[in-house]
Amino acid sequence: MSAIVHTGSAEATQTLAARLAAFVRAGDLIVLCGDLGAGKTTFTQGFGGALGVTSPVTSPTFTLANRYEGSLIVNHLDVYRLAHIDEVADLGLAELVDDRSVTLIEWGDAIAGVLPGGYLEVRIRMGDGPDDRSLEFRVVGREWRDREAALSGLDGDGSTDAEGTTC
Ligand SMILES: Nc1ncnc2c1ncn2[C@@H]1O[C@H](COP(=O)(O)OP(=O)(O)OP(=O)(O)O)[C@@H](O)[C@H]1O
Ligand SMILES: [Mg+2]
Image 1 (tube, rainbow, N blue to C red):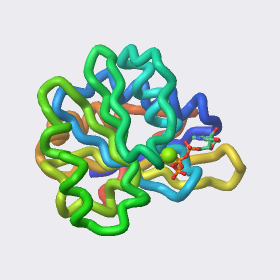
Image 2 (image 1 turned 120 degrees about the vertical axis):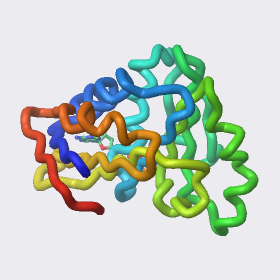
Image 3 (image 1 turned 90 degrees about the vertical axis):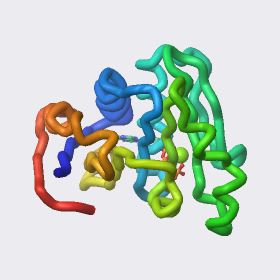
Image 4 (image 1 turned 30 degrees about the vertical axis):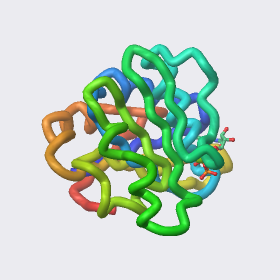
């Protein structure tokens, strides 16, 4: 199962992320994929805001991992700069993904093989106009499976396509 939602502005992507945050659970893992500047950090800002994070959510490109306090702890990682897959061990992923936190990993598809469990993949693609994006939601593993119907109900600027394809 996958669902595709279109947005036409950064704010619309943040609103969509906030809708997703409404059915997130402690221990959840979200993998954000898409090119440089696609909107992965923008998505995380909307997501964190909806969970009551008040400090500014900034790109963790140089810090690798940021941690924010909201109604849940929001871990925000960016693994773009990891040179070797064995550096993933230093991130302590298994410890981060605990029962008080939700973890979002930019470029997490690059380390999919070593993630500690199932996850929701959010793949952001550029559209025709400079502010057009499509966001594809795909459930990998069992943790998000019971929320597939809710994911299919997400909408952005009006149009949602449900598809049976994978990335
Ligand atoms: N529909 C949209 N959704 C998300 N961002 C958008 C949209 N339209 C324009 N933007 C702009 O695109 C940029 C996205 O930057 P952002 O830092 O979120 O990308 P990123 O995927 O995290 O990049 P990187 O891989 O470098 O970390 C922002 O300047 C944002 O305002
Ligand atoms: Mg980013």
